[in-house]
Image (cartoon, rainbow, N blue to C red; front, side):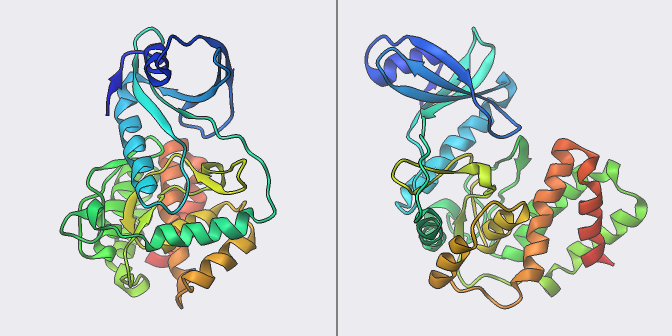
Length: 297
C-alpha cells in the first residue's frame, strides 16, 4: 500500500485531478479515532479517520483487515482510498468511501446470511501452514492484539487473547482476582471447544462497526481481523446488543448453533470486557471481575 504525506495528495491521486475539500464535518463513531465527512468540490464525499502519528500502524492493520474481508467476496466493506501521515495536521489517517445509510426491512436477514458466508470462507491464506491467528499482529481498539499462528484454538485464545489482557489489567486486580484469572486460563479446556472449522472474524463486531448501506445490505468497518472460532464474533454482537434476533435466526439457518454456546459466549465476551477495562478504565472492572470469578473460582 502507498503511504501518503497528506490527505490532500491522496485525494488528488485518487481522483486524478486537484480536489478541494469544501467542508469537513465531524461525525460520531467509536471512541478511538476522530472521524470526519469530507464534502469535495467534485460532488463526491469521503470518510476520514485520524489519530496520532504514533498510531499510524493501526491504520495499516485496519487496511489489511478490510482487504481480508473484501477478498472473501461475502460481505461488503467500504472502498479504501489510502492511508498516510499528514504533517500539516500532525495526524495519521485513513481515507475511504463514505457509506450513506438507508434502512431496509431485509437488512438483518441478509446480514445474518452474509456473516455466515464470511465465517465459512476459506482462511488458509491468512494463517500460512497453521489454523488460527493472522499473518500479522493488529489492534483491538488502540490496544495491540497478538495473532501468533496456532493449530489449537483454545491455546490461541488463552495465550493471544485472555492472558495479554489480564497482564495489562494487573494494576486493577486484587491478588484474589489474579489467582482466579490464572485458574481460568488453566481450565479453558473445560469450557471451550475446538471449532469444526476456522473462520475469518471481523474481531470487533459491535453495532457501531456495521452500517446499513443504500443497497439495504450490511457494510462492515473497523475490523480487528483474525482467524478463530465463529462464535467469538457472535458473542461480541450479543455483548452490548443492538442486533435484531432476525439476524441470528438467519445466521443459524446456515451455521447451526452448537450445544454449550452460552457458556462459551461469556468467556468470549470476557476478552472484550477486559479490553474495555484496559481502554476506558475501572467502570468495566465489576463486569470483568464477575466473569473471571465465574469461571476461575
